Length: 102
Image (cartoon, rainbow, N blue to C red):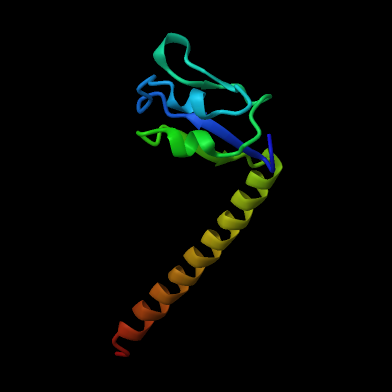
């Protein structure tokens, strides 16, 4: 895995044509059961298979550590809570300004 990147095959798009396997200088791709499989331990992320696939079935994904995801989720939740509180205050001000003083 290079820079937390991984190449994955979208099985529903793979034709099993073998063009990706032919393009791979590391011989990291096999076609068991008619669908491409990438051996991540052999893959050097050169991207040749991405270019070779006629259906775009091979995608590059970033692996994000769980701790980073949890931190991001907590930050987003805090921002969402803040926005909800602001909206509630605005609604209350709007209701207060509509009240008839008598």
